Length: 127
Image (cartoon, rainbow, N blue to C red):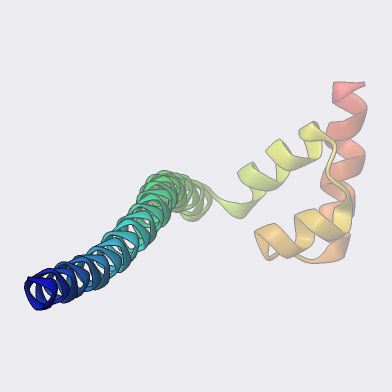
């Protein structure tokens, strides 16, 4: 009978030891799963932040592209106005706006003397 009790005790000990080992492995797997989930959530948050930033930059690029296109159109308009009018008409307009002779000569492709004369004539009229 003592042998049966000892055998039963050894069996219960082995069963308890096996259950303890199995429980520890399950706890380790659970902890790894939690760490993995927290890392996945962190990565998801980082990706969401990067996506939001990319979308914001994309919108800004689109806005800048539109503004650049509008400026290019305005520049084309100004160039066509300058080329369609005589350089003197544009020079007179610039002189009336108060531009100096060097700027007028450069923009209208006229001599500095002509630009000076236009400035003298049309700035006096504006005053």
